[in-house]
Length: 310
Ligand SMILES: NC(=O)c1ccc[n+]([C@@H]2O[C@H](COP(=O)([O-])OP(=O)(O)OC[C@H]3O[C@@H](n4cnc5c(N)ncnc54)[C@H](OP(=O)(O)O)[C@@H]3O)[C@@H](O)[C@H]2O)c1
Image 1 (cartoon, rainbow, N blue to C red):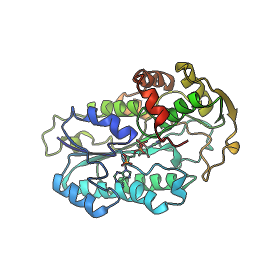
Image 2: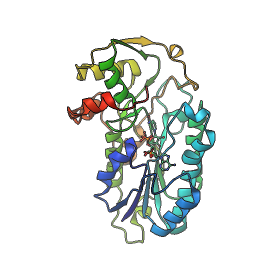
Image 3: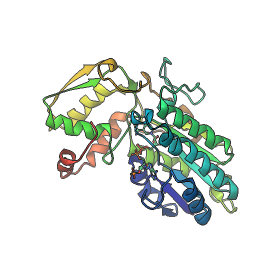
Image 4: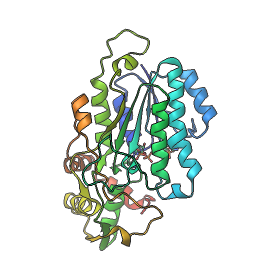
């Protein structure tokens, strides 16, 4: 099996790479080897290597900056997935892709299901929704996993920022009126592998993935279980890492000005994933413990010295 993994240096991509290697030959060109915003380069790469499976973990994820960089956001989040779908369709390959809670406006009362109407609030969310639509319309067998509030020990994310600020500051203010499920990149990678493990690859065809996915293609919500606010998430992080001594104060979103509004309710209902594949990710609090258990003590210095977005 030939697998193309994009975004290998990102949070989800870096968690996926070692796991995907158990399924076949993984090629994971970093940005310097394959610029995914260069449609010609992408076309040449895919036509040459003909991966059975593309796992597209690359994205333009700078939510605020996307308001000024619409073209860059749409190139990665909208045009790229559609192009990957069209290229895979040419020869019978398949695609796994990731999307976001930001396709919703957050006004619903309970958790969002895959059937709920999308209404993104900003450029990032619109570009991700366009990517879902483009990929689905390409006609390729596809699984799109919408996830939320991704964190991990690699890359820029809320957990790392809080671990740093918790040690640097006496007091931090954290938004307490947005609800969602913080989701560990490690859980997303494992959940993806669990879904793949349910696919029957014994069928004899040039690409057994394509046969095995029949009837199961589509969008799935894939987040850690439960829900919380950024404020309570921070408090739990600090409980688990006592060296983070900063006092955590709750604030409303309005006190944290940003160029784009975030959904108040980011909760995604994972029932479809469990019903179709029998896959359920751990509760967010357990996943956080698992993630922090992988934090080597040397990491503290890295966290304190790296250039982390605040
Ligand atoms: N982060 C979140 O909170 C969140 C929430 C919901 C859904 N998601 C979705 O989850 C998926 C994975 O997100 P993530 O947090 O793992 O993202 P991430 O850490 O920001 O990683 C994105 C990856 O895409 C790569 N990339 C971006 N532009 C590229 C280009 N022009 N050429 C080649 N590579 C390029 C980056 O490369 P470099 O390393 O070179 O920059 C990076 O490796 C995405 O679909 C995202 O939309 C994320």
